[in-house]
Image: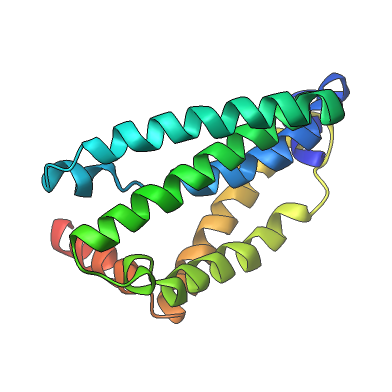
Length: 171
């Protein structure tokens, strides 16, 4: 709610439940299996996924919107995209002969999530009103980034070290 109040106004507080459901959608969108399927020239999986996704979404809308309203529509969308992710991920795992746990390195994902969650604690500090509001928001965002980067390096996330190595070469 505080993010909605900060960025918009109290007029948008009714949108908070939809935004909460939608955050799951955003997590799913971070997992893109399409490139791997295109490289293997296995694009028929997109067709199968689309047909079944449309079915799931349509049923979800029919069943959830009458009960939950706009939140039901958001839940139906999330269910469709999550299912699509599982399906496309299973196709990628089969095509490349990879186990699901190797496809998504959960320990590394967990470390990044832990770092983000701990760094996000900085963002719960009450935001002042008036003239200092936006400088405070920008400052706390910079502190979040610093804490996050420090934590992913401390937690030994390989991609963070790779990025740091690349940046050092550029500078």
